[in-house]
Length: 415
Image 1 (cartoon, one colour):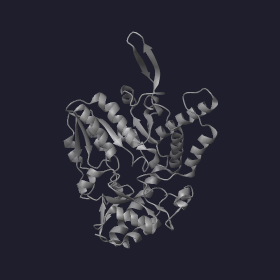
Image 2 (image 1 turned 180 degrees about the vertical axis):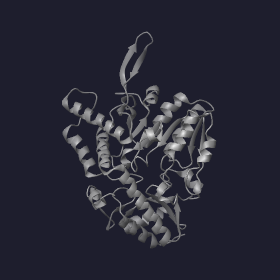
Image 3 (image 1 turned 90 degrees about the vertical axis):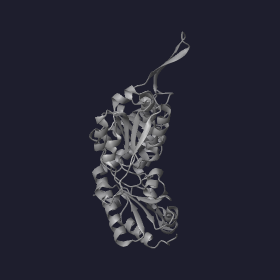
Image 4 (image 1 turned 30 degrees about the horizontal axis):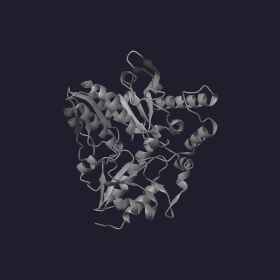
C-alpha cells in the first residue's frame, strides 16, 4: 500500500487553507495536483534549455528536442505501446478523441454507417461523433446503462451490426465510477471489423493499462488528470492506422516537405513521420516534459498500488455513507471491485451546487457539482439538477473521508 503521508509531502498545494480550514481536495476526476518533481521539471526546462524543437541545430534546441521525444517514449512504455510512433501528444482527451473522429472518421465513414457508443460517455466522446456523423450521414447509436450503473453488454452486442464502423466507450465513467469491461466490448467490435476507441481519461491515471491487453485501436487520456500539467494529453493509436489516416491539423513540423508545382499552380505536401505528423506547430514542450516527470512519479509508486489505494478509499466511503447517513442518494455500482475512486451523490432534494458550496465554505472540501460533462447520463438517472462528486487520488486519506462524512451529516437540509 501507499505511504500517503510521504506522498503528501511532494504536493505543496495541500498545505493551503481554505476559509480557515485545511484543504481537503476531492476533485481529482476533474484535475489532479502536481508534485514538486513535475513542477521542477517544467521549471528546469524554462530555466536551462528552453528552445523550440525540431527546428534548430543549436544546443538548446537539440536538448529540448531530445527531452520532448523521450517523453513520448516514457508514455509509450507506461501504457504498453510499441514505441513513440504510436503516441501523439495532444492538449487533452477531448482533442485526442476529436482527432480520431475527424482524421479517421471523415476518411472512412459513409452514409448509413454506424458509430456505437454508450449513454455513460463524457461529452467529449459524444459531440465529436455526432458532428462527424452529421457530415458523413452516419448514425450514432447509444447503448443504455443498467440501474446498478453498469454497462448493458447484452444491449451493446445487439447494437453492433455489420454496418458498425466505430465502437467507442469510456473505460471508467467519470460520474458513476463504473469500470467497464472494455476487453469484452473490444471483442464485439472486432467481430464486425469496427475500430475500437477507448476514452481512458479516468483509467490511465488510476490503474495499470496495457493497450495490447485492452485490444483497443485508439486510447485517449489527459496528462493533467495524472499529475501532469494542464494542456497535456495523449492519443495512442495503432501505428498502421495512424499511417493510413490524413493529418488532423496542418502547419509546421507535421510536414516533411512542401513543394510548389508550377504546372498545376498548387503546393504538394509530404507528411512527416509518426508521431510528428499529428503534432502541428510548436507543441507544449514544457508540458510534455512535465508529463514525462509525472509518468516517472507514478511508475515509482506502482499503478497497482494506486488502484488498491483508491479501491480501499471508495470501499471505506460507501460503507460509512450507507451505515451512517440517511437521505443520501449514491450513483454507480456499490461493488468497489468494479468502481473507481469516484463518489457521486445527492443530498435529499438539495441542489448539488449548494452541497459543494457548503463543503467548500464550511469545511474546506473541494468537490465538483453539476452534470460533469455527462448530461445524457444524468437525465437517464433522473438527476435533473446534476450531482455532487468527490473523487480520490494517491494523496487522499481515510481521515479526509471522515471529515467529508461528518460534513454531510451536518449539512443544513434544503428543499
